[in-house]
Image (spheres, each protein chain N blue to C red):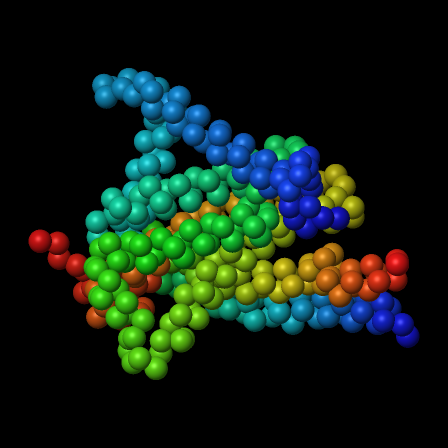
Length: 242
Length: 92
């Protein structure tokens, strides 16, 4: 049994090796890009919408609403990044019901790449919003002694982000395979349905956590740590735009 | 006992123990979290959307500790680097 689609190699050409992960990542990306191009080519502003445009509007507005609820401030800069993460991961996890498709999110390489995107995006958004000094001073809060802990925390949450997504998707596949050996007929179907639910929830969690990290990095530095969690109000840390 | 047998034995036992012990904490924590969230929703049904969103995020973060245990035990069983090393050494 293989626990990673990295190990399935389609063809090898010199040092270039096309594994399942790579192939299906590009397939999902091509699918998303082509679908989005095809739908947005003929957008309508009047009362009659095509069903596809309706779907996209529901998706975009849903993500916008979630980001607005969590970040509680200007959500426009986060939308492309967080929305792309959500749509990509959700598509990968949902396509797992297609026979022969191995979700790329079930590989630690893909999830690490996604988590690294978040790791890089957090300082970028923070610095662009607040400037170098204000952002970097956050690492010296509450005292400069905490600097190593803050740095380690940054890395640890990136690792947690990657392993969480990988573990959830991989565990679905492995549990499905094990159940297929024990009870071939009925239970694997149920587990597969559960896996679809888990896939959507994990995509949501990934996007929410990315938003929380971005919102925490772009908030004012006197924000208390728990105020950046999605459950709290966060209003006291708002940046008042001129 | 030769090295491969010892490694196989320890890997399998440790994988079982990892899942068995590692899921106790997350299970208790998730139970508590859900119970508290239901109590909060019963008190304030209007806030159900916010509460359930926080609950989902919290549950996923709690559950990830159990998932780490699962990943470690899967690595021990299916992709054990020490086992692979000794099998490769024995094959030569």
